[in-house]
Length: 419
Image (cartoon, rainbow, N blue to C red; front, top):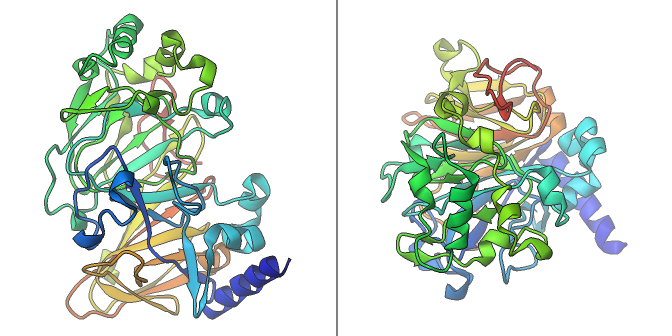
């Protein structure tokens, strides 16, 4: 009880001190099966801070109340921490104590948590071809499905890595039997699944929407990835860049009695959506300005938007302020914010983009804007006289009344438009 009261008081104090804005510490996540691209500003000496057996750190998670589902994970892996004066507690605990104030009453009453998160992932080469289950499939193992969005920030992609392309979906005409055979060949080297997919060259400053059950093998650009709050997946590629992929990564989020059922595993794939002949037109995103504000010295852009299976699950914007400019932004919901260029102030909190970060070091580049502050309006101010201040902020479900028009997928996996 004392601990709960302490978190309650600390959360209220932090909200009052920051006028509705919380400062967050960096959250680093390793992946044992990938090789870091070394562009997240983490000191190279700390890439294996969790131990070499855990793999290199290639992800930084933002405003996360979602645990990372890694093998041998720490008890708080993936969770963001609020830091206020000498107090430190998880954002998850803060939301549990002040849910309505932090994320809005409607979202709190529906989900009882902050149901989304975002991250940077940074790999020197491609990720293996995989998918994320939908809600129905994930529920079989007590989890939730995961749609996700991609955006490739210019500021973090001066170098593009070894393979700046992403494979999406399957070639029209691909059969279940062909993919079933790929899974059957798992322990015989490269199972050849990329023979049935198509690679798209990635362009910094653009993005994609990836619904559940869509096969994808992300490329080597640093990627900003708003997504649903679940770390569920199924790997379909047995070898990448000459490195074998454990078959356990195919079945880790599948019921135990289905691990050897190739038909069940093959049907994790949404076949019509994966073989959409107009896949790029239905999933590729170019940023869209929220309004005509360039003459005022700032630009707020939609960078991730749209509906997944008819629902608004998450979205993101990029705000750029020219030197010396300040503006007040009113959003319809809470957001997690990361600074990717410059320095200035968000509300009463000073922010800046660090050049190098030691593992465990506190920074001033990440905040959480509460529902109360967002709807009242938050002032962003660029304190530099030479460089832009650039921030990315992502939102939870059902926040916006209006979003940009987009394409309508024949499979209804993705659509965007006014809510």
